[in-house]
Amino acid sequence: MSVPEINIPADLLPQDGRFGCGPSKVPSAAMAALAAVSSTWMGTSHRQDPVKKVVGRVRAGIGSLLSLPAGYEVILGNGGSTAFWDVATFGLIEQFSQHYVFGEFSSKFAEAAKAAPHLRDPEVVSCAPGARPALVASLADVTCLTHNETSTGVMMPVERAAGAPENQLVCVDATSGAGGLAVHATAFDCYYFAPQKSFASDGGLWLAACSPAAVERIERISASGRWIPASLDLFTALDNSRKDQTYNTPALATLFLLAQQLDWMNENGGLAFTTARCADSANRMYSWAEARSWATPFVTDPSQRSNVVATIDLDASIDANVVSAVLRANGVVDTDSYRKLGRNQLRMAMFPAIDPDDVTQLTRCIDHVVAALG
Ligand SMILES: *Cc1c(COP(=O)(O)O)cnc(C)c1O
Image 1 (cartoon, rainbow, N blue to C red):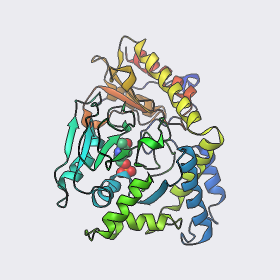
Image 2 (image 1 turned 180 degrees about the horizontal axis):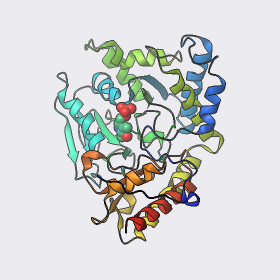
Image 3 (image 1 turned 180 degrees about the vertical axis):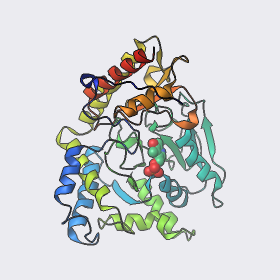
Image 4 (image 1 turned 45 degrees about the vertical axis):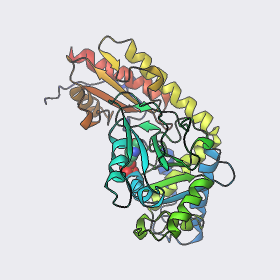
């Protein structure tokens, strides 16, 4: 691929050029706050009060952001959302699960459940990328939703299927949706995510908001004698989280930046603030694409288009890889499509930390590059 030299004028550039879907933009103010405590925070014990207090602040901050009802608990552990699929396969699914598969991430959890020798094969409800499947009642003891399918830019509402059995847990991969999309805690039993997307921190951690029914399930499976590797044991994670700790050493910078972002979200109005900000960004992005003859939102149904991850197809006459490369050369990075989707597409995050005005500037940059490519 040859990348032509195109200079985007400074007045079109965003203040911050990071539009990646994870790791995603970390606000400079949060990095400055981290630098300010570099010798008193980094390199100190995670078993001592200062770190435990920040873990407590993170757990409470998620509780207020998601308006968790009494009895819900926030559990955390190491390994990111991918590790949580294995954690849930061991510690949350009793006999078999149901999965809504509509992209790369949702398919991976289904594969993990299928591979687990102690579980029956999962039920999979799938559809082609670019849309989401409708809910189907199932007898599975856990049903697995994905709040935002990051690979395709499709969001799905978090709901309980009509006719689902009473003991069925709703487990939601909210890795990229949490913090940017609306949700009611009564609609889920386990809402898990990682800090490197809407929470503007770094990767490596998983966090899960769990209902009393999920906690009861975790305790029951743990008591059943099922073999569970210690580092993937959800009951061990629950036990440690209650003491504001993790089973093994967490990344302290990740925790610090996560706490900063949660404070910023909650101080500015919580989920109502963050969801309105993402909706504003999304509105700017999709209305821009719809007004261009050479750009089309990949997701045809506007109600399924994600407010946190935009996927925009470009006309075949314009190479999206070249557009991304030119943007990158100008400091506007990570607009590349999800590689396995294989489309001539730009994919851009609109997480809460990203300023809606920067989304507008990004669209101006794309206009400039496309015009210059002629
Ligand atoms: C990024 C992502 C994951 C993987 O997260 P890791 O922390 O890298 O394991 C899983 N699910 C969704 C929906 C994601 O966006």
